[in-house]
Image 1 (cartoon, rainbow, N blue to C red):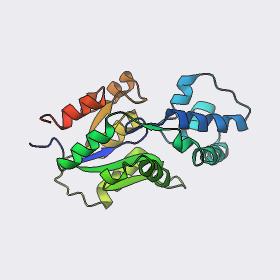
Image 2: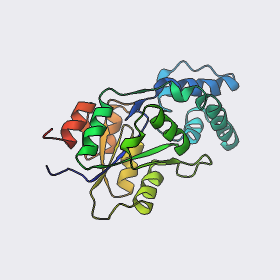
Image 3: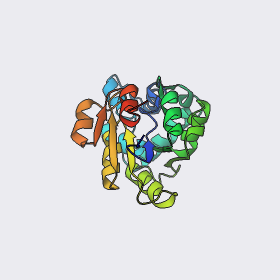
Image 4: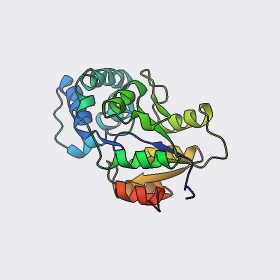
Length: 220
């Protein structure tokens, strides 16, 4: 079988795992420090995917100092509890296993700090499917998806002639891929709306893990 790509970059939150509970609870923990009660679920869901520092500024008009402090508060809760308030999407392990068997190189590209991403993937026993797990540093370096993808393409052993695609559920995944000159596959089973995904214009859009498998493993 001729593979559609040679290397696949996977987003983590909203693509491999359903991390809503842990992220939302961590954000609510932060807001409680400021006496804020947020009842708009869509605002809390918007924190899943993009860099936290930017989201606190965007949705609550925090200044730079408040945003940095909020990220520290977030990590207080997340590293102890929120990281485990999480679950793998059904059929993801099976898909990763089959992709690996078919010779795809699989890499995680996330805005989440690498140290947390590795803990999540180890906890759910998914780490062994990936040759690399690349996220941001705790100081904010590589917090944008475009920077994570650029790092992967420039530093890892990926030959220029390889066909590479970014798979993710938010516009940041698709925009980051485009900025680095690679294809993207938008998934709508995560936290980005179909409208958001369509507006970002990925190469492909799939609505389920099964559809993703049909695209990447058409003859399985």
